[in-house]
Amino acid sequence: MTTDPLIEKFQQAGQGHVFAFFATLPPAEQRRLLDEAAEIDLAEIARLTRTLLAPGGAAGIDLGGLAPAPYERRPENGGDAAAWDRAKAAGEAMLRAGRVAAFTVAGGQGTRLGYDGPKGTFPVTPLKQKTLFQVFAEKIRAAGVRYGRPLHWFIMTSHANHAATEAFFAAHGYFGLEQARVHFFRQGRMPAVDLQGRILLETPGSIAMSPDGHGGSLRALERSGALDLMQREGIDTLSYFQVDNPLVRAIDPTFLGWHALQGSEMSSKMVPKAYPEEKVGLFCAQGGKTVVVEYSDLPMAMQQERDAAGQLRYLAGSIAIHLLDRDFIRRMAAGGEGVALPFHRADKKIPTVDAAGRPVKPEKPNGVKFELFVFDALPFARNPVVIETRREDDFSPVKNADGVDSPQTCRDDQRRQFGRWLRAQGAAVATDATGLPAAGIEVSPLFGYDEDSFAEAWKKLPPAPSIRDGLYLE
Ligand code: UTP
Image (cartoon, rainbow, N blue to C red; front, side, top):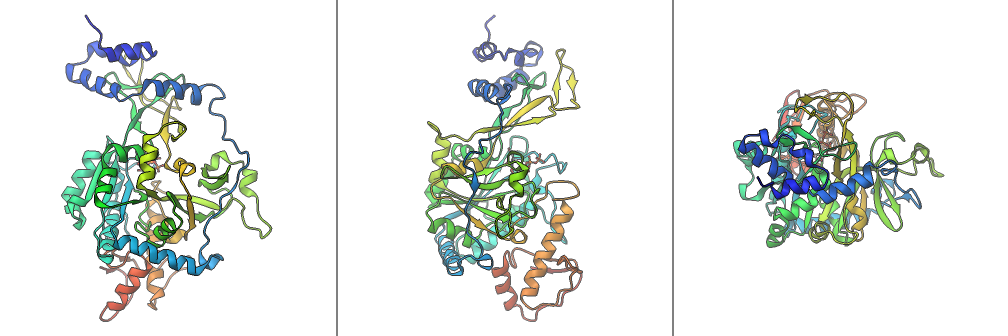
């Protein structure tokens, strides 16, 4: 009997246990297990085991020479208003020229929310219960109409949610977008390993594989042909945002303009941290590069440091909104000497099997997942720009089932935003002290998807409606 060469490679790498139950599997499952195994780069797993799992291997990051990253302040905080105006005009010209596409990363597992289905299919708006995907679709559609150029939209899925995501869009007629402009592609996967670096089986016939992190988007964009498509269509800039944040200005001309005018290859939005202990990554400068340092890696004493004016020194919180230059993504995806995103280690409870093939549901972390983070591309980018945004204009993610960053806080933040847009137009909106309107209201992105587009639409209304419970503007 001959052994499959792939199985031999696993044996030689000390990972032969992956095939412990192989002989007992039906042929279809054998095939599937071999396919999964073929996705794995054994040398990479060996390297990660050495660097991230060995005692002391995952030592904290180097804090040498770390300083707060510079960023473009908003005009009301001392920024140059004329420069912000120039940026907006430049970004609008990019949109009219069709140079921009939207990009949503939707390959996460969404374990904290605990919702059964792709996270983008979660209902999120306060009145109409529109799903996250519908909100983004309508923003993208409205921006396309506004600038006279329909936008392409790339959506990164995972192996687990790809089919369900595609089916959802088909069932909803792509929410009025042209099907040919909505592109789905799967991200890569990585095997989970135990604390000694041995690849974990999820069942006797399958490996515990999980998505390779949002940083996997760079190589997935290349592999899927998305970058080629962009090139053919004359698109040079991707507007990157997460599937869990319906408040995001998915298409933001001012941000685009800052990015283009500074010749940036990767740009980011920051919000000032609300309090020192807030759990967000921080934009920092180190060795002439821009980096994001995770809150868990920055000593609390540094997070609490204040400048002479009493403001937090490390103020610039990352909210996972970026612009990416097409050729930069290509360069990152190609890798090469010293050009690679580092993997991060996340210790997790990973369902697996025991030596007899029986299921094991661990009570405490029994293994490690390896993930890439997109912000780790920043130090490789030429002229990276970080601009300030207001949290209430761009960021209210749905992460947890309740408490902070939950469906409830997100619905309330959407209502506050609608209330602000209405009040800016002189409408009488009664609110509580936090700005939450008393009435349940909703604005469709097709009516207005940011303050400017809302103002234009409002001024065109025959008579402006009175603000009442259940008011929906479309
Ligand atoms: P999160 O860090 O919130 O992770 O992802 P998650 O997997 O969605 O949720 P939890 O931690 O299990 O509760 C932030 C964004 O990055 C995407 C997610 O879909 C979300 O838009 N993401 C994350 C990917 O696309 N791929 C990944 O491998 C991880």
